Every structure is written in structure tokens, then in C-alpha cells.
Amino acid sequence: MQGAEESAPYAVPRVVGDISDCYFYHTMEIPGHGVVQGEWDLRPGVDAYLGGFDFRGKRVLDVGAASGFLSFHVERNGADVVSYDLSEDQPWDIVPFARGDAAAVEAGRRDHMRRINNSYWFCHRAFNSCAKAVYGTVYDMPPAIGPVDVAVYGSILLHLRDPFRALEMGARLTREAIIVSDLLPYGRFGLFRSAAVFMPRFQRINDWFTWWRLPPSLVCEFLKILGFEHTTVTRHRQLFCGKSRTLYTVIGRRA
Image (spheres, rainbow, N blue to C red):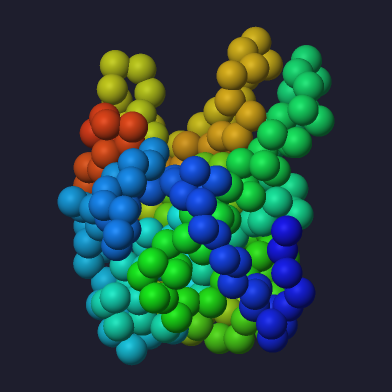
């Protein structure tokens, strides 16, 4: 269970001794344990994933930290890191399929988040990390986190009912730049889509956790509205469950 707050809003570190009680969202090389497989293996392309950004001396908010791969990577590259994510105590943005059993899905997701949180703390201790963790929803980020130089949104906007609101919350804390990585939206015949795609379909209840495919042009517009008017877009390939996927990274810098 989540402990009492060490110093609001930061979470008290968990001591997780059993790696079998962890779920690794990212493939990671953990001291004393070797390579542990996760869904995403960002190791070969992490610099492209982060847009080649120089994190030295920056205070960084890693939104949707999951197992902490990006948090620990930017920390090793000279950043002071705040990792932000859900715990088992906050609800996931599940698609409310009327034909499905949303309560059962939510209960399973809470246990899944507990194990993801465990993987973060397991790695935090193994890497001797100084990163701090805050738990909450992306729609209500506590101002007590304080100002950060950079906010990183690593492939989470597609899982959110309101991606603009999530960016708005991070933008209120961010002084310099926001980095967004996400899947490049493709349609039929492998053609790139330039418009947002609403992913859920009532005929098939097979994905309770994916809402959108957002084109980079729309993410750029979101960021410009929020004051990050200087945007760049790059594309790259990353490994998801052993298969290469095309992603994009947008960096928005304050005017």
C-alpha cells in the first residue's frame, strides 16, 4: 500500500524486494538482474525518442513514468527528476463500453498499476536514484510540485480521454519546453493520417485503454495554444513487443 507522504506532494519510496511482484512497461537493464523485458524497448532509440534534448541541469517532470525508464535515463544525463504517474488509488481513463464489464476491468487495472509502481521503486533502489515520485491523475497535477524546466509526455496522450487538458496541466508547471512522443497515425494502405482518429469502436470491445491517434500537427497546435510556440517534429522507430513502430516526437519551446 502507498505510505504516508514524506513531504507533500512526494511519495514515500516503497521497498520492493520481489521482482516477480513487478510489471515492467519498459525493457530495462537492472543492476544485479540483467535485462528485464517490458512492452517497449526504447534503449536503442531513446535519444531520438526524446528529440535529442539536452537535459543537463534541468528539472524534469516525467509524466506517465511507468517503470521509470525515461526518468532514470534523463537523471543519468544530468537532470533533477520528478516522476509522475497513477497509483492503484487513482482511476485509469478506461473507455466506458456499455457492453462490457467496466468494474472488472477497473479492478484489474488497479492491480496492474500497483505492479507497475512496484517496478518503478524496484528500479529506483537498484539504480540508487534520487528521483522523486508523485502520484495523481494528469488532470489534477499538484502545484506543490513546483516549476520544472521540461515536461516529458512519453506515449501517454493516446491513452487519455482529454489529451489537451493533460498538456495544459503540465504546461502550468513548465518554464522551458514540453516533449511529446506518440505513435504516428496511419490509416488504410499505410497512409499517414493528418487528422485525429478516435480509436474506440462499439462493435469490438478489445481495447479499454486507447482513445486517440493524434497527428503531430495537432500536438504542435496544442502546444502553441499553451504558449510553447516554437515547435519541431522528428520521426523515429522504436520496438514495441519486438516489432518496429513509427513514432514522432514534438518539442515545443516557450516563446
